[in-house]
Amino acid sequence: KRLVQTLEQEMDRPVLFVFLGDNGSAAEVFAAVDDDNVRSKATLYDGGVRVPLMIWGAGVKGARRSDRLIHLADLFPTLATFAGVEEDRMQNADRPLDGVTFRPEVDGSSSNAPARAFSFFERGNDALLPFAFGAVDEAGWKLILRETERQTNYSAGHLIEVYDTENDALEARNLFETPCTLPEARVMALFEFIASKAAENHAHSDWFEEEFYSVKLQQALQSCVSQSD
Image (cartoon, rainbow, N blue to C red; front, side, top):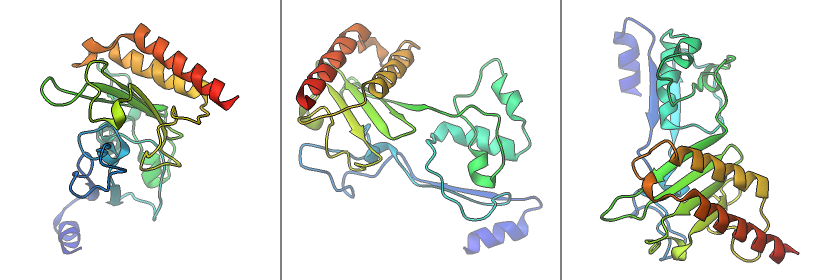
């Protein structure tokens, strides 16, 4: 409080304060679902990627809370608009920004920026962690695809995982497990989004075989339908 008050008194222009956490909680402080599921920092689970974000100061119109899907990359365009940069200027750049401004959630204004339907995550390295792609949509549905050759130590070695993070924040139940009922169109939309990102030559996309995962996903969805019948 004293730091905020001092800065506001000393600055010759409006101040906007941003507080956010690092990428996930350390394993030592995160209550894992069980011994086989490490769902904290350095994973694609919400315990590893969901962090607190608070903004206050000049331009903030009262206390408000948003459930909008926001990524760290959204901070730059958001702060840029507060600094007076027009949204159209950022959107029409030769190298468009990955981020999307969430200023309307802060000041209650309208925005020309497109809404984000999905957020994308990628994790892996040659020495320690299996490669994995994950995507989550605005409704909180998350799809995770893992490398086929190294599935150990991650959710009992599941190749494909789907979670309803809105109703299962700890991601305790992979919705492909028995019994299961899944919105096929939503899951396939997440898969197509991951496939499009893998095609953009990300650092670890060389292991991703779209046809292989597409077949496995369709088989899992069909099995899920059969179980629900």
